[in-house]
Image 1: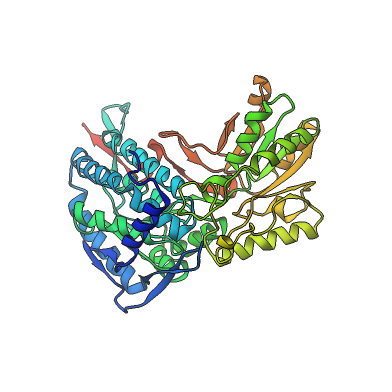
Image 2 (image 1 turned 60 degrees about the vertical axis):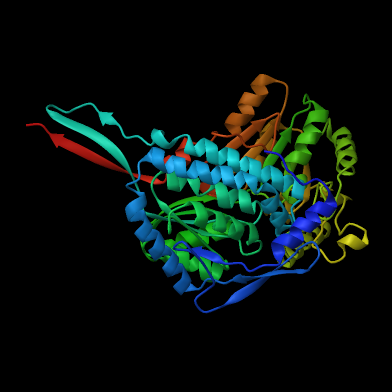
Length: 500
């Protein structure tokens, strides 16, 4: 799939075409506003311009969406898996045709570079196609008989699934994260990210056109009202969240107050990248920039390797190369196809990141690059933060311990292998890690010692279709992006046949 739009002028024209219109939620096959008529405004984080009035779903709207999904489930669960797959394949093909539209909306509404958002659409389509292809792999087992008995298991859908997605990859998550529950026979109520809901609402229109009414419902609003009502709805027995650790704790607590729900949580990380003295420095420097996600979502990624552990023998040379590489990054307006790094998603996120930068200075970290807003009139009204690098970071500093969710990289010098393992594992997070060495035994030992759910060796940041992605410790519950994700949307029923 390739983008059909190439120039800044064309992207701007497409933006204007998309924005001058009304936006609605999808509930029960209908595009609707909130029952109360309540709305909120979404603004462009790069320019501050008004983008749209968005329906603000209240508890009543959530209940309507869940009820629509519940009714649709009674029909959808009886559709054979291959028939479900056929319907979803049609959706995927149409989805790919609108790549530019989704990319533009995520650029102007979320602050991410438009070129990266085109890649997000492609990645979403790839994941959707992979998942649909596993429709017949939702299998039970036969178990060796006990005497004259016969035992088997069968997998059945839960019913209505509540999905809550974040703002860093809006359309990628909105599109790809409905397929696993649907292919397993469930129906979905998806809450779009309140900071940048537009691409999800455009996708809702495609779902309305191509899927049976109520199978997919897409609602908008904030976490406290809309998200909480979804989590607390007693008809929902299975919830999936991508978000921060604090949001995950809130969802766990709120859901438990109304019943026992099955949850998968992909949560935050304060991830370690460890560079050994024998590493290929050129590749490792590129890996550090990629791993920090400067060029995709401005460091707003749970998987960012924001703690860079450099062996003291290579630290000076590595930092010199790193700064030279970062200095090449093209920071610009997200709508510009040449932009490599855009802006943060909101005022709140901008203030949070800037607070951590000031705190790091106060605590004694050495700021060696960035730390403020880039120079230029085009940046004055947006939430832009330069790629920021600190060295001489110690384990008692907040930029060492806290997930900042912004373009702030902390460099920690190390000499002793046992000490670097201890520091890497010290935090309650354990989502990803990146290891750089050309010595195979060192790589194996480090992989074994690091407490993280996904570890790259001589790589960083990349996800691979069909390879499970999950976190250790506070970084999550459950696995996504592989067969395990699909199976997690089923519950196992054991059947015992008494032959005699």
